[in-house]
Length: 198
Length: 198
DNA sequence: GTCTATACACCGATAGAC
DNA sequence: GTCTATCGGTGTATAGAC
Image (cartoon, rainbow over all chains, first blue to last red; front, top):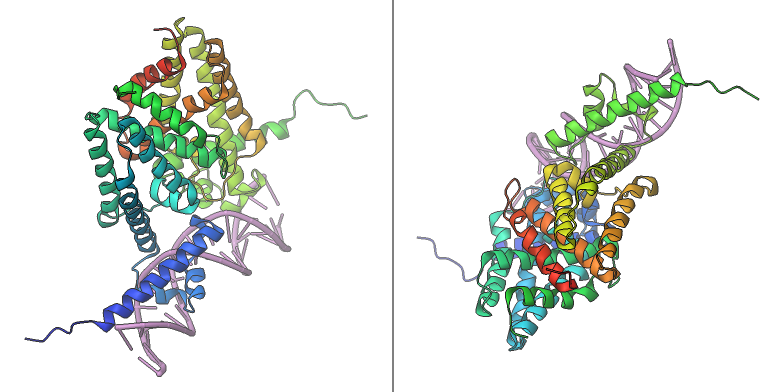
């Protein structure tokens, strides 16, 4: 039986290049728009030709897929930071959960489009890339259940409400705060609706 | 001075062909997806070659633009039908306004993407095509003001709430009713929030 | 194993003949 | 007004150089 080396430099190198590709893709997506990303641009930025990318990703959509997973995984890291600081008041905690997600979405248009919209024709996230998104949802659902918001319908309304405010903000007042200012009031409305204490 | 003819058969023919092109575009958009529309397909469907379309529309986005205007103009016709039947109760009227828009959006995915989402990279509706969309908004704003919901913030929340439910329905349960079932309850929540009578 | 050159099929758009 | 031909662009497949 072959002895396994403690490190596999081959795989490490491969992973490093994958990361380099994704970093270049994020930069270009923010510069020129998510949909205007081209493999030739990504490759040129890291000193390669377009076909070389196929040694690291099987398709352009696979790059989008990895970026999708990255974005949601990064958000889990944000949650991990925020969760210990959640207020004890259910109502205030709900506001902070909503605010955290809202701000993360609004802070990066390209990332928001990839995470929450279907702006790339034909792109459908793979189950693996979607897993962290599911975890985010589940953790939100658990928090609300802890506050007594146990119904799945209430949680569906919660997500739709936040998503609607985010989309309106990004579409109609990008960079502004016309809908951002409404978030806390909307959460109070929701809290009253589901009977959270004042 | 030249005498104007009562009819201009040239322009009438041109208009008829434009309509033919748009009809073919709608059919193909519903069949193969809005973003997967190609000029070659549209042209073939009406017995033309792709470059001939440029005699009627200056670009592919101009076709999307005309479709955008059509969709919103058609919705105005829907409003005109519904408005005389609005309940006297403000709360019930708000529900019906929301339900009408929700159902119109959910009934046709391609149309909804064009009207309410930015799913076509680089497409921005022209002011002329956007005009009927503005009229729809203004008429909604007028209705709500008539019910005592005069604040622009309240109306912004109203639109974001409906839009959020529509997007959630289309994205996560297309063809189903998981979020559609929540619409009336959401409107009661909103009505309580803005103080509409029971 | 990595990367490249080449090529293919398709796209929106343009030029010019008829 | 409609065509053919073509341009520059895209994502992607493949063969082969190193």
